[in-house]
Each structure stands twice: as C-alpha cells, then as structure tokens.
Image 1 (cartoon, rainbow, N blue to C red):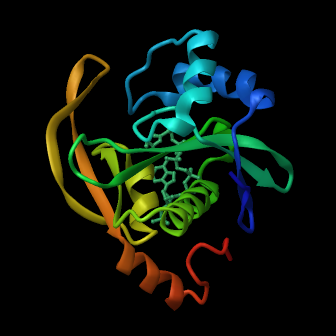
Image 2 (image 1 turned 90 degrees about the horizontal axis):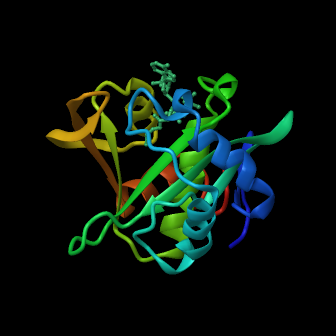
Length: 192
Ligand SMILES: CC(C)(COP(=O)(O)OP(=O)(O)OC[C@H]1O[C@@H](n2cnc3c(N)ncnc32)[C@H](O)[C@@H]1OP(=O)(O)O)[C@@H](O)C(=O)NCCC(=O)NCCS
C-alpha cells in the first residue's frame, strides 16, 4: 500500500511504529465517545487485528494513519470495511485522535483521500458511511464531500445506556468522478 498525499494531510499505512499511539487513542474514552461504543481492547488483539486486516475486507481495524504535514505528526486514523455479507459496498470511518486537530478540515481531507483511493484501486460502485444522528461533525464531514443522506436506521447503535438512530450516507462512483472532475483533479491522483 502506498502513501496518499493531500495538501494538509497524508494517509500512510499503519505500521508497528504507530501501534502505541493508535492503541492509546482507542483506549481514551474521550476520543471515541460520545458517539460510539467504547470498549477497551488488549494490545495483542489490537495488533493482531491490524496485521490481519489486509486479507479481510470486513475488518474494522484501522488501515491508515492520518499524518498532518505542518507541523508534522500523526493526528488520527481511518479505515474501511465491507459491512454487509451480500451487498457490495464499502463503508469508511474516521477518527482524529488528537482532539486539538479537530475542526480544521483535516478530517474531511483524510476521508477525501480515502474515498479517492477506494475508487482508484477497487471496482466498488458505492462508498458509504454511517453516522450517529447526533454526531454533527461526522455527517457534516461526508456531506461536504458530496455524500447523500440516504436514510435513517432507527435504534441501530447502542452506547451510553441507550439506543441511537444512525444516518446512512453514500456516494456512488459516477458522482465522485463528476465531483472530482469539477474540482479539476482526476480521481485517484491525490488532492488539492
Ligand atoms: C468526525 C471527525 C473525524 C471530524 O474531523 P474534523 O477534522 O474535526 O472535521 P472537519 O474540520 O474536516 O469538518 C468537517 C465538517 O464538520 C463540521 N464540524 C467539525 N467539528 C464540529 C463540531 N464539533 N460540531 C459541529 N460541526 C463540526 C465542520 O464545520 C465541517 O462542516 P462544514 O464544512 O459544513 O462547516 C472528528 O470530529 C472526530 O475524530 N470525532 C470523533 C470520532 C468520530 O466521531 N468519528 C466519526 C465516526 S465514523
């Protein structure tokens, strides 16, 4: 897997040098909460999941570290997975573990690079995302990339003691290509 270069962040495959940082983020309830389940993993099972992810399209393990270019450093991680046993689409997910880096556009650029990569390297026709309806930053992020809200899954996610509704978002290949060409960049070539 190659590095994916943007203007303010790059995505690079997660490797052993990142494990302690990313595992630390996973184990910080303030990073994942308040919009998701929080469960503490062991370092061994975390490393095993990362190291077997390449051969498992359904793996929820992080696949890339988000590295800010200036000042340089790891600020988060992203992943993609096939969520359904029959339907043929890929969902993306994204976390900025460094909370001071949020709200500055890094998350959106990271996801743009990830979607570019998926359309450039696979034959998938639809890339999706699911967002807790209360997670405004998450759904605004994908809306800004042209994802459409396709519906709401009611009571689909349990965390913090109750069931939460979840928005379903998606962008199909032709929409992504049209958006990219309108922005003047051929799909899959890195970012403005
Ligand atoms: C979701 C997350 C990755 C967003 O990354 P980010 O770099 O902070 O987001 P961006 O700066 O690229 O902004 C994306 C959009 O969200 C909006 N936004 C960012 N933070 C926000 C907040 N706290 N509240 C409301 N909207 C917010 C931005 O204004 C922007 O929308 P706009 O262009 O329409 O104005 C980050 O907040 C995060 O790591 N959250 C915790 C993990 C998580 O919830 N992940 C999503 C689950 S898949």
